[in-house]
Length: 153
Image 1 (cartoon, rainbow, N blue to C red):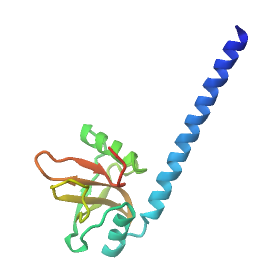
Image 2 (spheres, rainbow, N blue to C red):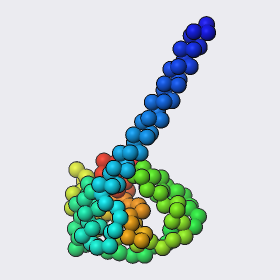
Image 3 (cartoon, rainbow, N blue to C red):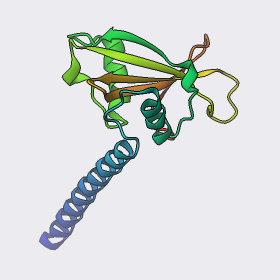
């Protein structure tokens, strides 16, 4: 009986170890994606569109629109859900609560396959560093995707 319990305990420990290893591996992959997208020093249209390309999105540089937005001090349901989307891509808006950031919006030139909707990419910038983003449609039945292409919401 003791050997059976010892075997189960070893299997559980192995499962916990493998889960932690997988989580660490996933974080490294997200870090590599963010580094590949060059999310810092985004002070020009060229650098911001290159950042978008690093995430897998081709955007029209001439379509750039910008606006200042304030990240709320307290997240309601909308911002909680939006921040969950950000966390899937390795970002987190929590440290920017109460801060004013710039949202840059571009027309996406390579939308997801089989889509007839117009897609827009949003990049949130604070001190010339990307702190978040998304891709969305503005159709009545529209939806939002993570900024990392292929990272399903």
